[in-house]
Every structure is written in structure tokens, then in C-alpha cells.
Image (cartoon, rainbow, N blue to C red; front, side, top):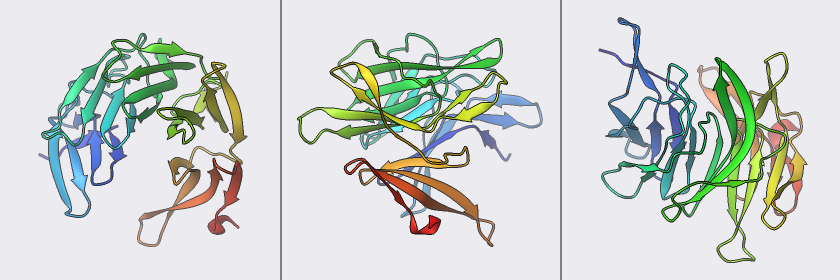
Length: 266
């Protein structure tokens, strides 16, 4: 029987892409079921290989990768039960398995998540209270496998969910890094989502957030990504073959602190 997998996450490593979480919808019995497997896909060999699934059916979780680990943070069940459970997978240790991390102090869904050298940063997200989502800006971090509980840092303002969290090594100070948070959304008093166009950096000494820049004309249809020391803002365009082409609109260079308009947007 054909399976309908919904609300899963996809994340990319150098060699493989990973399909994680979500649930299987049974259209006959109208049930949401735990997937039997997660998957990894190798684009060079065009092989889709099953791997062990997350221990529970979870959606709206935070997801991040650092080349060695994949982390899954929080989320909620398909029936909207908030979750504080977190998991980590070492992707170069075969067969891949999920290991439980310490639970978050409070459940959260849609957090921004970043990881670098096993140090995990969880920022913002939303709570589900009486079937309404309440956005927050709480910031937790954990050093795996050393820490046994999450450490609370200064919350971010404006509060936001589903932001991009970027961890960048500090070339001037060994074993240190910069933590950036870009984009995301909040919910206004009319219960409608609004884009948060700011980029902030966490100041480790002052324990506060510093505004770095504002993303010009940020819209919900835009995608955010980071590579080559730049934050990239992109959008997808449907071509004549009914396929989507992703184009970069503009990029922010963290070394020069300048926005660069793409030739596609000029």
C-alpha cells in the first residue's frame, strides 16, 4: 500500500540527504502512525536507504547538522501534544542510531537550532496553549556529550520561531564561535504570522543580543541559508517543466558586513 508521509524534515550533509520524522497518514482508517524508518538519500548513487526512525511520531521539531551530528529538538505530536525530548545521531557511525539528549526544561516547537562541534544552540520557537501557538525567544545550549542538562542564556528579542541559527568558528580565538540568528516569524494580535527580518549575534561577554543587520524586504516565501561566510536569501520559481528553480536574491557577507544583490535581482 502506498504510504503518505507528512510533515517530515529534510537536512543535507556532504554525501547524503536525510528524511526525518513526521508521520504516516493512513487514508483508509484516517490514522496518523509512527514511520517505520527514516531515510538517507545519496544523490551520486541515487540510492534511498532506510535508517532507524525517531522513537516517536513528531512534527514541527528543530533540526540541525554540523557534518558529524544531526540533532532533533522538541516539536509536538500529530495531535498537538508539546514535546521536550531531544535526540542526536552520529551520521558517520554505522548503523546510524538515535541517542536521547537531556530533555529541554520546557517543551517547544519550531525552534531555531544550530550545532558546531557538538555544542547545540536552541533559540526561540512556539508553545501550544489551548490549541494556540505562543511564540517565545528562550535560548538554551548544551555541550554534547559533556553536559547533563541545558543551560539557559539570555532570551532573544524580537521573539521568533523557525529562525535560522548559524554557528561560525571564531578564527581569532581558538575553540570559540559566533552565534547568529536570522529571520523567523512571530504572531500578531490578529493571530497572523509576521516575518522577523532582523539578524542578531549573541555577545558572550555581555550576555545579550546585538543587532547586526535587517534583511531587506523579507517575505515568508523566501528561504534562508548560510555557506561561504554569507547569509543567502532565496526564492523558488516554477519553470516550464513544472519544477522549482531556487535563485538567490541577495547575500549578506559577515566578513565585510555588506549586502550583495544577486545579478538575478538587478
